Image 1 (cartoon, one colour):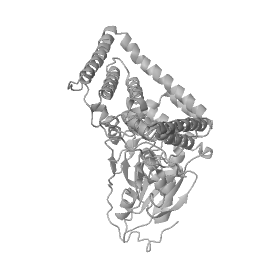
Image 2: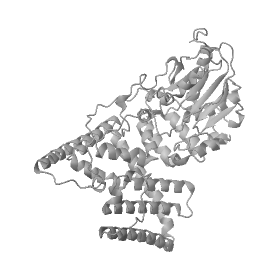
Image 3: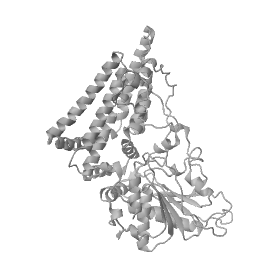
Image 4: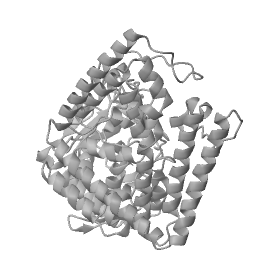
Length: 557
Protein backbone atom coordinates (compact mmCIF):
# COMPACT_ATOMS: atom_id res chain seq x y z
CA UNK A 1 0.00 0.00 0.00
CA UNK A 2 1.14 3.54 -0.70
CA UNK A 3 0.07 6.68 1.10
CA UNK A 4 -1.23 9.78 -0.72
CA UNK A 5 1.28 12.26 0.61
CA UNK A 6 -1.02 15.26 -0.04
CA UNK A 7 -4.16 13.78 1.50
CA UNK A 8 -2.36 12.04 4.32
CA UNK A 9 -0.21 15.12 5.06
CA UNK A 10 2.98 13.15 4.92
CA UNK A 11 6.10 15.22 5.32
CA UNK A 12 5.54 18.66 3.84
CA UNK A 13 9.12 19.65 4.41
CA UNK A 14 11.19 17.78 6.94
CA UNK A 15 10.97 18.59 10.61
CA UNK A 16 13.74 17.51 12.86
CA UNK A 17 12.07 14.64 14.70
CA UNK A 18 12.44 14.03 18.40
CA UNK A 19 13.80 10.57 19.18
CA UNK A 20 12.65 10.20 22.75
CA UNK A 21 9.32 9.02 24.05
CA UNK A 22 7.82 8.74 27.47
CA UNK A 23 5.86 5.88 28.97
CA UNK A 24 3.73 5.20 32.01
CA UNK A 25 5.07 3.56 35.14
CA UNK A 26 2.05 1.31 35.23
CA UNK A 27 3.27 -2.14 36.53
CA UNK A 28 2.67 -5.08 34.22
CA UNK A 29 1.17 -7.94 35.16
CA UNK A 30 1.83 -10.44 33.49
CA UNK A 31 0.82 -11.74 30.91
CA UNK A 32 -0.18 -12.91 27.47
CA UNK A 33 -2.95 -11.95 24.98
CA UNK A 34 -5.06 -13.73 22.39
CA UNK A 35 -5.39 -12.24 18.91
CA UNK A 36 -9.03 -13.24 18.57
CA UNK A 37 -10.01 -11.49 21.80
CA UNK A 38 -11.51 -12.82 24.99
CA UNK A 39 -15.21 -13.70 24.90
CA UNK A 40 -17.20 -11.74 27.47
CA UNK A 41 -18.67 -13.75 30.28
CA UNK A 42 -22.40 -13.73 30.96
CA UNK A 43 -22.13 -14.42 34.66
CA UNK A 44 -25.17 -13.69 36.79
CA UNK A 45 -24.57 -10.62 38.86
CA UNK A 46 -26.05 -9.98 42.29
CA UNK A 47 -25.32 -7.17 44.71
CA UNK A 48 -22.56 -7.80 47.20
CA UNK A 49 -23.86 -8.65 50.68
CA UNK A 50 -24.13 -5.86 53.19
CA UNK A 51 -21.51 -6.32 55.88
CA UNK A 52 -22.23 -6.05 59.58
CA UNK A 53 -20.66 -3.18 61.55
CA UNK A 54 -16.95 -3.78 62.30
CA UNK A 55 -17.54 -4.01 66.04
CA UNK A 56 -19.98 -6.91 65.61
CA UNK A 57 -18.12 -9.81 63.96
CA UNK A 58 -20.88 -12.32 64.85
CA UNK A 59 -24.41 -11.44 63.66
CA UNK A 60 -27.47 -11.99 65.81
CA UNK A 61 -29.01 -15.50 66.03
CA UNK A 62 -30.55 -16.69 62.79
CA UNK A 63 -34.31 -17.38 62.73
CA UNK A 64 -35.47 -20.85 61.80
CA UNK A 65 -36.66 -19.76 58.36
CA UNK A 66 -33.21 -18.48 57.53
CA UNK A 67 -31.71 -21.85 58.42
CA UNK A 68 -33.85 -23.26 55.62
CA UNK A 69 -32.36 -20.71 53.24
CA UNK A 70 -28.87 -21.61 54.44
CA UNK A 71 -29.58 -25.31 53.89
CA UNK A 72 -30.89 -24.63 50.38
CA UNK A 73 -27.77 -22.63 49.52
CA UNK A 74 -25.55 -25.42 50.88
CA UNK A 75 -27.35 -27.82 48.53
CA UNK A 76 -26.76 -25.41 45.64
CA UNK A 77 -23.13 -25.12 46.70
CA UNK A 78 -22.72 -28.90 46.49
CA UNK A 79 -24.28 -28.87 43.03
CA UNK A 80 -21.96 -26.09 41.89
CA UNK A 81 -19.05 -28.10 43.28
CA UNK A 82 -20.07 -30.93 40.97
CA UNK A 83 -20.04 -28.50 38.04
CA UNK A 84 -16.59 -27.29 39.07
CA UNK A 85 -15.31 -30.86 38.88
CA UNK A 86 -16.94 -31.32 35.49
CA UNK A 87 -15.32 -28.13 34.18
CA UNK A 88 -11.94 -29.19 35.55
CA UNK A 89 -12.20 -32.73 34.21
CA UNK A 90 -14.03 -31.94 30.99
CA UNK A 91 -10.91 -31.66 28.84
CA UNK A 92 -7.53 -33.28 28.63
CA UNK A 93 -6.00 -30.12 30.08
CA UNK A 94 -6.51 -31.37 33.64
CA UNK A 95 -4.16 -34.30 33.06
CA UNK A 96 -1.42 -31.99 31.86
CA UNK A 97 -2.15 -29.53 34.68
CA UNK A 98 -1.86 -32.35 37.20
CA UNK A 99 1.46 -33.41 35.68
CA UNK A 100 2.79 -29.85 35.83
CA UNK A 101 1.59 -29.48 39.41
CA UNK A 102 3.38 -32.69 40.38
CA UNK A 103 6.54 -31.42 38.70
CA UNK A 104 6.32 -28.14 40.59
CA UNK A 105 5.69 -29.90 43.91
CA UNK A 106 8.71 -32.15 43.33
CA UNK A 107 10.90 -29.16 42.48
CA UNK A 108 9.71 -27.28 45.57
CA UNK A 109 10.39 -30.31 47.77
CA UNK A 110 13.89 -30.72 46.34
CA UNK A 111 14.69 -27.02 46.73
CA UNK A 112 13.40 -26.67 50.27
CA UNK A 113 15.04 -29.99 51.11
CA UNK A 114 18.41 -28.45 50.25
CA UNK A 115 17.67 -25.62 52.70
CA UNK A 116 16.66 -28.13 55.37
CA UNK A 117 19.87 -30.12 54.88
CA UNK A 118 21.97 -27.02 55.48
CA UNK A 119 20.16 -26.31 58.76
CA UNK A 120 20.26 -29.95 59.91
CA UNK A 121 24.01 -29.91 59.38
CA UNK A 122 24.20 -27.16 62.02
CA UNK A 123 21.92 -28.36 64.83
CA UNK A 124 22.90 -25.64 67.29
CA UNK A 125 22.03 -22.88 64.86
CA UNK A 126 18.80 -24.67 63.92
CA UNK A 127 17.87 -25.00 67.61
CA UNK A 128 18.38 -21.26 68.15
CA UNK A 129 16.18 -20.48 65.16
CA UNK A 130 13.44 -22.78 66.45
CA UNK A 131 13.72 -21.23 69.90
CA UNK A 132 13.25 -17.78 68.37
CA UNK A 133 10.05 -18.92 66.65
CA UNK A 134 8.66 -20.56 69.78
CA UNK A 135 9.52 -17.50 71.88
CA UNK A 136 7.75 -15.20 69.44
CA UNK A 137 4.62 -17.37 69.32
CA UNK A 138 4.64 -17.61 73.11
CA UNK A 139 4.82 -13.82 73.42
CA UNK A 140 1.85 -13.48 71.05
CA UNK A 141 -0.16 -16.02 73.07
CA UNK A 142 0.65 -14.23 76.33
CA UNK A 143 -0.42 -10.91 74.83
CA UNK A 144 -3.66 -12.52 73.64
CA UNK A 145 -4.43 -13.91 77.11
CA UNK A 146 -3.90 -10.46 78.64
CA UNK A 147 -6.33 -8.96 76.14
CA UNK A 148 -8.89 -11.68 76.86
CA UNK A 149 -8.64 -10.83 80.57
CA UNK A 150 -9.43 -7.19 79.79
CA UNK A 151 -5.94 -5.71 79.82
CA UNK A 152 -4.57 -3.34 77.25
CA UNK A 153 -1.61 -5.01 75.53
CA UNK A 154 0.31 -3.77 72.51
CA UNK A 155 0.65 -6.33 69.70
CA UNK A 156 3.90 -8.24 69.39
CA UNK A 157 3.58 -7.93 65.59
CA UNK A 158 2.07 -4.53 64.76
CA UNK A 159 -0.48 -4.34 61.97
CA UNK A 160 0.90 -3.36 58.56
CA UNK A 161 -1.47 -0.86 56.87
CA UNK A 162 -0.04 -1.78 53.45
CA UNK A 163 -1.11 -5.44 53.80
CA UNK A 164 -4.62 -5.34 52.35
CA UNK A 165 -5.39 -8.88 53.50
CA UNK A 166 -5.79 -7.70 57.09
CA UNK A 167 -7.55 -4.35 56.77
CA UNK A 168 -10.79 -5.43 58.49
CA UNK A 169 -11.01 -3.99 61.99
CA UNK A 170 -11.49 -7.45 63.55
CA UNK A 171 -7.90 -8.37 62.69
CA UNK A 172 -6.90 -5.78 65.30
CA UNK A 173 -9.82 -5.50 67.72
CA UNK A 174 -10.76 -9.16 68.12
CA UNK A 175 -8.21 -10.97 70.32
CA UNK A 176 -8.77 -14.23 68.41
CA UNK A 177 -8.30 -12.82 64.91
CA UNK A 178 -5.44 -10.61 66.09
CA UNK A 179 -3.75 -13.75 67.47
CA UNK A 180 -4.23 -15.48 64.09
CA UNK A 181 -2.81 -12.52 62.17
CA UNK A 182 0.22 -12.04 64.41
CA UNK A 183 1.07 -15.76 64.52
CA UNK A 184 0.82 -16.05 60.74
CA UNK A 185 2.94 -12.97 60.03
CA UNK A 186 5.58 -13.98 62.58
CA UNK A 187 5.84 -17.51 61.16
CA UNK A 188 6.00 -16.22 57.57
CA UNK A 189 8.81 -13.81 58.38
CA UNK A 190 10.64 -16.55 60.28
CA UNK A 191 10.43 -18.85 57.22
CA UNK A 192 11.76 -16.07 54.96
CA UNK A 193 14.63 -15.45 57.39
CA UNK A 194 15.48 -19.16 57.44
CA UNK A 195 15.97 -19.14 53.67
CA UNK A 196 17.92 -15.88 53.73
CA UNK A 197 20.11 -17.10 56.57
CA UNK A 198 21.02 -20.41 54.96
CA UNK A 199 24.75 -20.46 54.34
CA UNK A 200 26.36 -21.92 51.24
CA UNK A 201 23.35 -21.80 48.88
CA UNK A 202 23.96 -20.94 45.24
CA UNK A 203 21.97 -17.91 44.01
CA UNK A 204 19.54 -19.97 41.90
CA UNK A 205 18.63 -22.32 44.75
CA UNK A 206 18.25 -19.43 47.20
CA UNK A 207 15.97 -17.55 44.79
CA UNK A 208 13.84 -20.65 44.20
CA UNK A 209 13.63 -21.41 47.91
CA UNK A 210 12.53 -17.84 48.66
CA UNK A 211 9.95 -18.05 45.88
CA UNK A 212 8.46 -21.33 47.08
CA UNK A 213 8.42 -20.08 50.66
CA UNK A 214 6.45 -17.01 49.57
CA UNK A 215 4.01 -19.18 47.63
CA UNK A 216 3.37 -21.45 50.59
CA UNK A 217 3.01 -18.64 53.12
CA UNK A 218 0.65 -16.78 50.77
CA UNK A 219 -1.50 -19.88 50.32
CA UNK A 220 -1.90 -20.65 54.04
CA UNK A 221 -2.80 -17.12 55.08
CA UNK A 222 -5.83 -17.10 57.43
CA UNK A 223 -7.37 -14.47 55.15
CA UNK A 224 -7.88 -17.18 52.49
CA UNK A 225 -10.36 -19.31 54.45
CA UNK A 226 -13.96 -18.70 55.46
CA UNK A 227 -13.50 -20.01 59.00
CA UNK A 228 -10.51 -17.78 59.75
CA UNK A 229 -11.42 -14.57 57.90
CA UNK A 230 -13.91 -12.35 59.78
CA UNK A 231 -15.03 -10.62 56.58
CA UNK A 232 -15.81 -13.95 54.92
CA UNK A 233 -17.60 -15.18 58.04
CA UNK A 234 -19.85 -12.12 58.08
CA UNK A 235 -20.56 -12.29 54.36
CA UNK A 236 -21.38 -16.00 54.49
CA UNK A 237 -23.69 -15.78 57.51
CA UNK A 238 -25.50 -12.68 56.29
CA UNK A 239 -25.93 -14.01 52.75
CA UNK A 240 -26.87 -17.43 54.17
CA UNK A 241 -24.14 -19.02 52.05
CA UNK A 242 -25.36 -17.56 48.77
CA UNK A 243 -22.00 -15.77 48.34
CA UNK A 244 -20.29 -19.16 48.18
CA UNK A 245 -22.78 -20.36 45.56
CA UNK A 246 -22.08 -17.29 43.42
CA UNK A 247 -18.36 -17.79 43.90
CA UNK A 248 -18.52 -21.45 42.94
CA UNK A 249 -20.45 -20.49 39.80
CA UNK A 250 -17.69 -18.05 38.82
CA UNK A 251 -15.07 -20.71 39.56
CA UNK A 252 -16.88 -23.08 37.18
CA UNK A 253 -16.95 -20.42 34.47
CA UNK A 254 -13.27 -19.57 34.93
CA UNK A 255 -12.25 -23.23 34.69
CA UNK A 256 -14.30 -23.57 31.51
CA UNK A 257 -12.73 -20.38 30.09
CA UNK A 258 -9.26 -21.87 30.68
CA UNK A 259 -10.15 -25.23 29.14
CA UNK A 260 -9.82 -27.01 32.47
CA UNK A 261 -7.02 -24.75 33.74
CA UNK A 262 -8.12 -22.01 36.12
CA UNK A 263 -8.17 -18.63 34.38
CA UNK A 264 -8.88 -16.22 37.23
CA UNK A 265 -11.04 -13.32 36.15
CA UNK A 266 -9.48 -10.07 37.29
CA UNK A 267 -11.86 -7.66 35.57
CA UNK A 268 -15.38 -7.47 34.17
CA UNK A 269 -14.37 -7.82 30.53
CA UNK A 270 -17.94 -7.44 29.28
CA UNK A 271 -17.68 -3.68 29.83
CA UNK A 272 -15.12 -3.30 27.04
CA UNK A 273 -15.36 -3.70 23.29
CA UNK A 274 -12.25 -3.63 21.13
CA UNK A 275 -12.31 -0.78 18.65
CA UNK A 276 -14.89 1.08 20.75
CA UNK A 277 -13.72 1.29 24.37
CA UNK A 278 -10.20 -0.03 23.79
CA UNK A 279 -7.75 0.02 20.85
CA UNK A 280 -9.80 2.80 19.26
CA UNK A 281 -7.14 5.05 17.70
CA UNK A 282 -8.10 5.20 13.98
CA UNK A 283 -5.91 3.06 11.72
CA UNK A 284 -5.97 0.18 9.28
CA UNK A 285 -4.04 -2.96 8.40
CA UNK A 286 -1.73 -2.37 5.44
CA UNK A 287 0.20 -5.67 5.42
CA UNK A 288 -0.34 -9.22 6.60
CA UNK A 289 1.61 -12.49 6.60
CA UNK A 290 1.70 -15.70 8.65
CA UNK A 291 3.08 -14.14 11.83
CA UNK A 292 1.75 -10.58 11.96
CA UNK A 293 -0.42 -7.78 10.68
CA UNK A 294 1.00 -4.28 10.28
CA UNK A 295 -1.29 -1.41 11.32
CA UNK A 296 -0.82 2.16 10.11
CA UNK A 297 -2.56 4.87 12.16
CA UNK A 298 -4.25 7.83 10.51
CA UNK A 299 -2.53 11.22 10.97
CA UNK A 300 -4.25 13.86 13.11
CA UNK A 301 -1.91 16.79 12.42
CA UNK A 302 -1.69 19.03 9.36
CA UNK A 303 1.92 18.00 8.80
CA UNK A 304 3.84 14.95 9.92
CA UNK A 305 7.48 14.12 10.40
CA UNK A 306 9.10 12.48 7.42
CA UNK A 307 10.54 9.65 9.48
CA UNK A 308 7.87 7.10 10.51
CA UNK A 309 7.80 5.18 13.79
CA UNK A 310 7.55 1.39 13.98
CA UNK A 311 6.42 -0.11 17.32
CA UNK A 312 7.29 -3.75 18.08
CA UNK A 313 5.14 -5.02 20.98
CA UNK A 314 5.54 -8.38 22.76
CA UNK A 315 3.90 -11.48 21.31
CA UNK A 316 3.01 -12.76 24.77
CA UNK A 317 0.49 -9.91 24.99
CA UNK A 318 -1.71 -8.05 22.53
CA UNK A 319 -0.51 -4.87 20.88
CA UNK A 320 -3.25 -2.63 22.29
CA UNK A 321 -1.63 -2.27 25.71
CA UNK A 322 -0.11 0.78 24.00
CA UNK A 323 -3.58 1.91 22.89
CA UNK A 324 -5.87 1.09 25.83
CA UNK A 325 -8.15 4.10 25.43
CA UNK A 326 -8.03 7.78 24.49
CA UNK A 327 -6.54 8.73 27.88
CA UNK A 328 -4.08 5.81 28.10
CA UNK A 329 -2.67 5.51 24.61
CA UNK A 330 0.96 5.94 23.68
CA UNK A 331 -0.09 5.40 20.05
CA UNK A 332 -2.61 8.25 20.13
CA UNK A 333 -0.07 10.51 21.84
CA UNK A 334 2.62 9.73 19.25
CA UNK A 335 0.21 10.41 16.37
CA UNK A 336 -0.73 13.73 17.97
CA UNK A 337 2.96 14.71 17.98
CA UNK A 338 3.02 14.45 14.19
CA UNK A 339 4.50 10.95 13.88
CA UNK A 340 3.34 8.47 11.27
CA UNK A 341 2.88 5.42 13.51
CA UNK A 342 2.95 1.75 12.54
CA UNK A 343 2.54 -1.14 14.97
CA UNK A 344 2.97 -4.90 14.64
CA UNK A 345 0.02 -7.03 15.72
CA UNK A 346 1.33 -10.58 16.19
CA UNK A 347 -0.75 -13.57 15.14
CA UNK A 348 -2.35 -15.74 17.81
CA UNK A 349 -0.61 -18.93 16.66
CA UNK A 350 -1.91 -22.46 16.38
CA UNK A 351 -0.26 -25.68 15.20
CA UNK A 352 0.40 -24.10 11.78
CA UNK A 353 2.93 -21.70 13.31
CA UNK A 354 4.61 -24.33 15.52
CA UNK A 355 7.89 -24.07 13.60
CA UNK A 356 7.98 -20.26 13.52
CA UNK A 357 11.04 -19.44 15.60
CA UNK A 358 12.77 -16.28 16.76
CA UNK A 359 14.33 -15.95 13.31
CA UNK A 360 10.91 -16.04 11.65
CA UNK A 361 9.62 -13.32 13.95
CA UNK A 362 12.64 -11.23 12.96
CA UNK A 363 12.38 -11.81 9.20
CA UNK A 364 8.59 -12.01 8.83
CA UNK A 365 7.96 -9.56 11.65
CA UNK A 366 10.37 -6.66 12.10
CA UNK A 367 12.18 -6.80 8.75
CA UNK A 368 8.96 -7.42 6.80
CA UNK A 369 7.40 -4.45 8.59
CA UNK A 370 10.33 -2.23 7.53
CA UNK A 371 9.80 -3.32 3.93
CA UNK A 372 6.08 -2.52 4.10
CA UNK A 373 6.67 0.87 5.71
CA UNK A 374 9.19 1.76 3.02
CA UNK A 375 6.64 0.92 0.33
CA UNK A 376 3.88 2.86 2.13
CA UNK A 377 5.83 6.04 2.83
CA UNK A 378 8.79 6.02 0.47
CA UNK A 379 11.06 6.76 3.44
CA UNK A 380 14.42 5.03 3.86
CA UNK A 381 14.98 5.94 7.51
CA UNK A 382 12.69 4.68 10.27
CA UNK A 383 12.59 5.10 14.06
CA UNK A 384 11.68 1.99 16.06
CA UNK A 385 10.38 1.29 19.57
CA UNK A 386 10.28 -2.11 21.26
CA UNK A 387 8.27 -3.07 24.33
CA UNK A 388 9.06 -6.00 26.66
CA UNK A 389 10.10 -9.08 24.66
CA UNK A 390 9.34 -7.06 21.52
CA UNK A 391 12.27 -4.90 22.57
CA UNK A 392 14.45 -7.98 22.97
CA UNK A 393 13.56 -8.99 19.42
CA UNK A 394 14.21 -5.44 18.17
CA UNK A 395 17.66 -5.41 19.82
CA UNK A 396 18.54 -8.75 18.21
CA UNK A 397 17.29 -7.45 14.86
CA UNK A 398 19.43 -4.33 15.14
CA UNK A 399 22.50 -6.48 15.82
CA UNK A 400 21.61 -8.62 12.78
CA UNK A 401 21.10 -5.52 10.61
CA UNK A 402 24.48 -4.14 11.74
CA UNK A 403 26.20 -7.25 10.40
CA UNK A 404 24.23 -7.07 7.14
CA UNK A 405 24.85 -3.37 6.63
CA UNK A 406 21.12 -2.56 6.83
CA UNK A 407 20.79 0.97 8.23
CA UNK A 408 17.06 1.63 7.79
CA UNK A 409 16.48 1.99 11.56
CA UNK A 410 18.42 5.06 12.70
CA UNK A 411 17.04 5.52 16.25
CA UNK A 412 15.55 3.08 18.77
CA UNK A 413 13.51 3.34 21.99
CA UNK A 414 13.13 0.45 24.43
CA UNK A 415 10.27 0.24 26.92
CA UNK A 416 10.99 -2.20 29.79
CA UNK A 417 12.98 -4.44 27.47
CA UNK A 418 15.71 -6.85 28.56
CA UNK A 419 18.76 -7.83 26.56
CA UNK A 420 20.80 -9.10 29.50
CA UNK A 421 19.28 -11.81 31.68
CA UNK A 422 21.99 -12.31 34.28
CA UNK A 423 19.77 -10.61 36.88
CA UNK A 424 16.33 -11.18 35.41
CA UNK A 425 14.47 -11.39 38.71
CA UNK A 426 12.00 -14.04 39.82
CA UNK A 427 11.22 -15.15 36.27
CA UNK A 428 14.55 -16.98 36.25
CA UNK A 429 13.35 -19.50 38.81
CA UNK A 430 11.00 -21.04 36.24
CA UNK A 431 13.77 -22.06 33.87
CA UNK A 432 16.41 -24.75 34.14
CA UNK A 433 17.27 -27.69 31.91
CA UNK A 434 14.66 -30.02 33.43
CA UNK A 435 11.87 -27.48 33.24
CA UNK A 436 12.73 -26.49 29.67
CA UNK A 437 12.73 -30.13 28.61
CA UNK A 438 9.35 -30.71 30.28
CA UNK A 439 7.93 -27.53 28.74
CA UNK A 440 9.16 -28.42 25.26
CA UNK A 441 7.63 -31.89 25.59
CA UNK A 442 4.33 -30.30 26.57
CA UNK A 443 4.41 -27.80 23.68
CA UNK A 444 5.23 -30.58 21.22
CA UNK A 445 1.70 -31.98 21.71
CA UNK A 446 0.04 -28.84 20.31
CA UNK A 447 2.84 -26.81 18.72
CA UNK A 448 2.38 -23.86 21.07
CA UNK A 449 2.21 -22.70 24.68
CA UNK A 450 -1.27 -21.79 25.89
CA UNK A 451 -1.50 -18.16 26.90
CA UNK A 452 -3.26 -18.92 30.18
CA UNK A 453 -0.19 -20.85 31.34
CA UNK A 454 2.07 -17.86 30.80
CA UNK A 455 -0.47 -15.60 32.52
CA UNK A 456 -0.62 -17.94 35.52
CA UNK A 457 3.18 -17.97 35.72
CA UNK A 458 3.20 -14.17 35.87
CA UNK A 459 0.51 -14.27 38.58
CA UNK A 460 2.68 -16.55 40.71
CA UNK A 461 5.27 -13.79 40.97
CA UNK A 462 2.78 -11.75 43.04
CA UNK A 463 0.45 -14.32 44.57
CA UNK A 464 -1.18 -12.11 47.20
CA UNK A 465 -2.15 -9.38 44.73
CA UNK A 466 -2.76 -11.42 41.57
CA UNK A 467 -4.11 -14.73 42.89
CA UNK A 468 -5.42 -14.83 46.45
CA UNK A 469 -7.10 -11.44 46.50
CA UNK A 470 -9.23 -12.61 43.55
CA UNK A 471 -9.80 -16.06 45.04
CA UNK A 472 -11.20 -14.43 48.19
CA UNK A 473 -13.27 -11.75 46.48
CA UNK A 474 -14.49 -13.78 43.50
CA UNK A 475 -14.92 -17.31 44.77
CA UNK A 476 -15.62 -16.75 48.49
CA UNK A 477 -17.30 -13.36 48.71
CA UNK A 478 -19.00 -14.05 45.39
CA UNK A 479 -18.34 -10.52 44.14
CA UNK A 480 -17.52 -10.11 40.46
CA UNK A 481 -14.48 -7.85 39.91
CA UNK A 482 -14.96 -4.32 38.65
CA UNK A 483 -14.20 -3.31 35.09
CA UNK A 484 -10.53 -2.31 34.65
CA UNK A 485 -9.12 -1.80 31.17
CA UNK A 486 -5.54 -2.85 31.96
CA UNK A 487 -6.68 -6.10 33.59
CA UNK A 488 -9.13 -6.74 30.74
CA UNK A 489 -6.15 -6.51 28.38
CA UNK A 490 -4.16 -8.73 30.73
CA UNK A 491 -6.80 -11.48 30.51
CA UNK A 492 -6.77 -11.38 26.71
CA UNK A 493 -4.18 -14.14 26.49
CA UNK A 494 -2.28 -15.19 23.38
CA UNK A 495 -0.47 -18.39 22.54
CA UNK A 496 3.25 -18.65 21.71
CA UNK A 497 4.77 -20.92 19.00
CA UNK A 498 6.86 -23.78 20.32
CA UNK A 499 9.96 -22.95 18.24
CA UNK A 500 9.95 -19.28 19.21
CA UNK A 501 9.39 -19.88 22.92
CA UNK A 502 12.03 -22.60 23.19
CA UNK A 503 14.63 -20.45 21.44
CA UNK A 504 13.83 -17.41 23.56
CA UNK A 505 13.93 -19.20 26.92
CA UNK A 506 17.17 -21.04 26.18
CA UNK A 507 19.08 -18.20 24.54
CA UNK A 508 17.93 -15.50 26.95
CA UNK A 509 16.94 -16.82 30.37
CA UNK A 510 18.99 -20.00 30.47
CA UNK A 511 22.20 -19.09 28.59
CA UNK A 512 22.04 -15.27 28.34
CA UNK A 513 23.47 -15.49 24.83
CA UNK A 514 22.32 -12.15 23.47
CA UNK A 515 24.34 -9.92 25.79
CA UNK A 516 27.30 -12.33 25.69
CA UNK A 517 27.49 -12.05 21.90
CA UNK A 518 26.72 -15.75 21.45
CA UNK A 519 23.21 -15.67 20.00
CA UNK A 520 23.17 -16.99 16.43
CA UNK A 521 20.37 -16.33 13.91
CA UNK A 522 20.66 -17.57 10.33
CA UNK A 523 24.33 -18.32 10.89
CA UNK A 524 25.00 -14.74 12.04
CA UNK A 525 26.51 -14.25 15.50
CA UNK A 526 24.87 -11.20 17.06
CA UNK A 527 26.93 -8.56 18.83
CA UNK A 528 24.95 -5.72 20.42
CA UNK A 529 28.07 -3.56 20.57
CA UNK A 530 27.95 -3.18 16.81
CA UNK A 531 24.69 -1.21 17.12
CA UNK A 532 25.76 2.45 16.91
CA UNK A 533 22.46 4.31 16.49
CA UNK A 534 20.98 6.57 19.24
CA UNK A 535 19.12 4.48 21.83
CA UNK A 536 16.73 5.58 24.59
CA UNK A 537 15.83 3.08 27.32
CA UNK A 538 13.04 3.22 29.89
CA UNK A 539 12.55 0.88 32.88
CA UNK A 540 9.58 0.69 35.27
CA UNK A 541 10.45 0.83 38.97
CA UNK A 542 7.89 -1.79 40.10
CA UNK A 543 8.17 -4.08 37.09
CA UNK A 544 8.43 -7.69 38.27
CA UNK A 545 8.81 -9.21 34.79
CA UNK A 546 11.53 -6.95 33.38
CA UNK A 547 13.11 -5.60 36.60
CA UNK A 548 14.61 -2.14 36.38
CA UNK A 549 18.05 -3.42 37.43
CA UNK A 550 18.04 -5.96 34.60
CA UNK A 551 17.01 -3.33 32.05
CA UNK A 552 19.72 -0.98 33.31
CA UNK A 553 22.36 -3.70 33.03
CA UNK A 554 21.31 -4.39 29.46
CA UNK A 555 21.55 -0.70 28.55
CA UNK A 556 25.32 -0.94 28.94
CA UNK A 557 25.55 -3.14 25.88
